[in-house]
Length: 263
Image: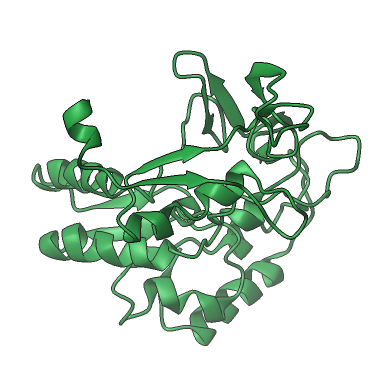
């Protein structure tokens, strides 16, 4: 450890912003910048709960965060997609950390910001393609990129709900197409494999070619969610009437306004 400390570039963080107080999230949002500067050890000034008579060094609780900087609660108010009464964040006792599970606690979300995750996914795909599989149907593939700030979701369900739908922050995220192009170049194109993407909340045919256009270098086909949700009034387990004319209009719009394969 002593030998290692002689080779480190350290930086001490004093959180601060225009309000006079910074936050833990503000520190983590600048980690890439510090890394680019060559910093590989970061220590913070005291962020423990404190009456703040001496810039936080007058610590009141060594096992709690001062609310001015953040809390040890879930990172935001996102609700589970399959149960809005529950948080999308789950606490793992073994590590003392929260993990994101947008659907259920039994389905931890993959952190696609980590290159090691990409490599693991590519290995899985190669494993099956080398055994003769012709392609993949990729479930909710457009949820793999998140808003890096993980912002709080606005109140949609009503003030009585502790958690709110956060889909706008993790559907069609900022790096989605980068990830899909990498998947195509690293795996799919090498096997001439078919890639069918389930991409909810893609309702504008004009946006679809970016993922499945002839020159996109990403997927081959996507589901038409206007068609999938034709009987869904956006209320869980509810139905709305529809006609064959409605279905025909959706199919016609998607097939004529785009040059893509869709289902």
